[in-house]
Length: 198
Image (tube, rainbow, N blue to C red; front, side, top):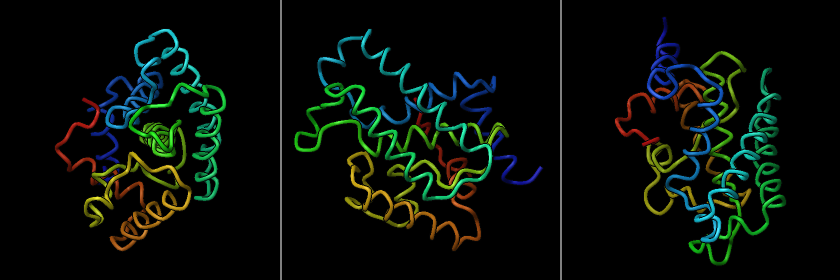
């Protein structure tokens, strides 16, 4: 078994030992919200509405992922992230008005990118889809490519320009190391001691 296959197995053994799609969906949403405030105060205290949002969110992730059985372009992926952001904001207009983002409220590109990318990573490691065109992004990955505070911040990202710019920086860094971006991130993630899902 090569390094990448070992890293896939390690990732699944650590986070999804039973190899469940349900678990992959749960962890994908959890990863996108745990350090990145999402819901308005009213939704944060209303578990029924929050459950409805999460169910819809999971349905969207599952729907988008069907397109990735075969290899997809980076442009398709970028568009999927933007589409997911827009769908969530349209369906739940006031749900994501967290006070942290007073001037730029809503379900953000950062939430969309992280949830879709983590889900695609699980599916790829499970052997259910082709290698995705982009890896999950967070401040750990941005720091690994040499960005320093505040350039390594991710949670506030909500413009296509900055999203694409930082994605392309990561891709270029991975390619300089003779790896695709998802393989590079998988190895970086494997060697990082921080359990980002706790």
